[in-house]
Image (cartoon, rainbow, N blue to C red; front, side, top):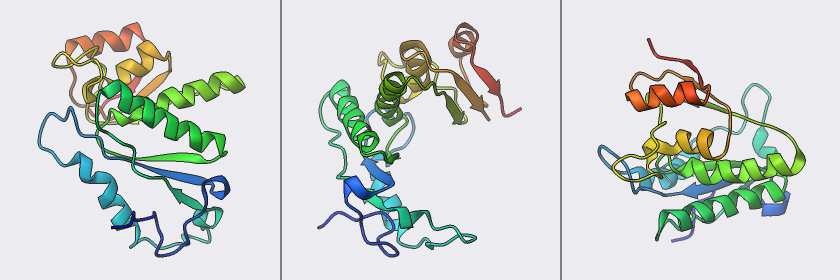
Length: 191
């Protein structure tokens, strides 16, 4: 079966070098805590995109072009998967496109953040993260895994040095509360 393209019901798929947006499917599901199905998320989102309208209040961003990349290979060691996510994100940035990742679990963000950090340093343009989540994801490791979905924001602040603002967190560990203090994480929790 051929790959489904984002919003192809409204716009012809664009070439990578001509699209303003690169849609990057990342069917990663390796450290989910409860339930499953994250790996089916990208395909479901691509299918659902066929029901979207192309025009909203006189704005039609799809006219700038959507390129749907092949799904990132999520097999093998997590570091290899993160490197492939980073490469796909860098390719979008090299094309001067906005990378749009369709995941998968939270861990997919780390590969993209690595690419964005590289580009920000290359052009001397700082950036930070705004996170809307019920969980802080600020654990140094979870169940022995430093690349768990529960660690992605820790990797962002501790390893990449990115500023972080969190909204709507309702659950966290003592370790995560301490990480917030250590890394000066701004937060507006659910309560």
